[in-house]
Length: 232
Ligand code: APR
Image (cartoon, rainbow, N blue to C red; front, side, top):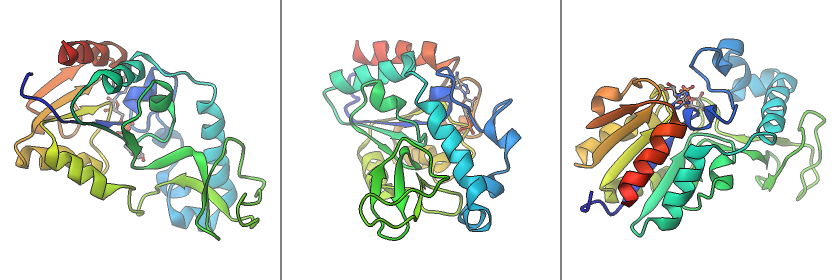
């Protein structure tokens, strides 16, 4: 491991599953109970804003009762102790990585605890509901939407992500099914760049064959074990 200096970590819903936050595509996941096209597209928001706002209000309230788990805490420890470059790219919109101590990170699919004003473009910290159309703290318009990247919208910070992948020695994918692009394509890009690739997941993801190494198990077990190993 001595030749590893720069690490990029991609996380998905599986890293928050053991904190009690719903995944999307595993048994009982959100996309078994809701259709993405009904609650997670700009067209859905235009067609039925109350359904979409209610869906995100429910999830925003739920995450505020959850706690970071051992995987979040292990990644927070890695962030504090790793002397090389590190970037945690999360697809998750919860704040459990931050509450677990992560600092060098970004949310490529947005953040639950922000509201985005469609009138003035301001993003404001937000913990309450949006269903009752509250006023934007900056412009006063009742034009707030969840600060979440919906299907068909461009994920955030792609330039920073690709720059980090180009400089990486190791790419680690944790708790993601590899079902949604562009995140699902990062492993292939990493391999084309000669970056070492590792998957930590409960079961093989759709992109599993692209990883040099794949370790299977619950994140609260295999992530702390890997962090211990890489810091040794
Ligand atoms: N530990 C480790 N991995 C787990 C655990 C666990 N306890 N529980 C589930 N997993 C794994 C599953 O095996 C699955 O591969 O986490 C993955 C979760 O996959 P998804 O539910 O598809 O979530 P994710 O990959 O994050 O979805 C990507 O899709 O709907 C969009 O924007 C949404 O960000 C989301 C994106």
